[in-house]
Image 1 (tube, rainbow, N blue to C red):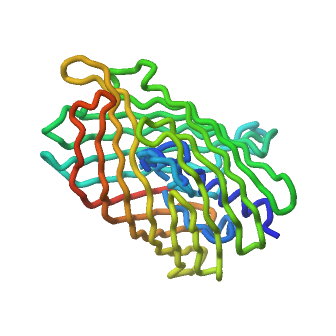
Image 2: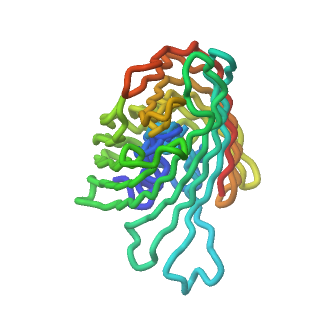
Length: 337
């Protein structure tokens, strides 16, 4: 049956962080949002979104939330005196995402990063602070603020009910704002619960839900199948962030993976309109991506993704200024350790 370590590795990489993923994205994580969870050093570490977000998280637009959370470095790196320290840094990652567009074609430049810490006394618990900023290009037809910010603090617990049944639960208080409207509408209480039924080392069933607390997409199901036909092929057929991964190179402790993925992007931010009125802006899109990742086992990973964004919607709680931006190209660069 699937072992504890490998399932923990997948769950960590698939923390569904839909945030500007956007968050990816942001609480799934989003991330929701690779085949049977493979060994930690065999999973391509693509930098979530978000969760997810996101994610965005994240692009995470989180980030929208998504499995597996993007990025997903699984190797642990010790901090000074890690053997005696009650807190250990497990991973750190950063990424840049570009959605092309100017004028009335909504463009976004996104920067986000996160770090995951584990408590030595509670192996099943991890804590992940993350933050991101989006610089908006256009649209001239509506007064979306030029900058949007998000900050989250994820508390995640991974456990085992029986030999073939594993689970994870997470709670993510978060802030999504333009920096001017920091009232109650900026506070988002996100969370997720996901179960894993392991049929074998190669195949697991995934079922759960992620609560994004977004105005446009408050709740998303998480479901699908993880299957690993071989060491070189991983199928993450899990909504809301399916991926197919193929190892295309391996030498001297390094691996290169190519993959195709889909994800949901977007998020909801408390904003202040030009007339001084408080409002909430919600952005949503769908993304198809091709990616390539170079991974130095038990060390760093770097990835590049490119693709197309479609089905874009910008909506306001007030209903003033809603519109559908044109489809555009997406480019993402990510680095993790």
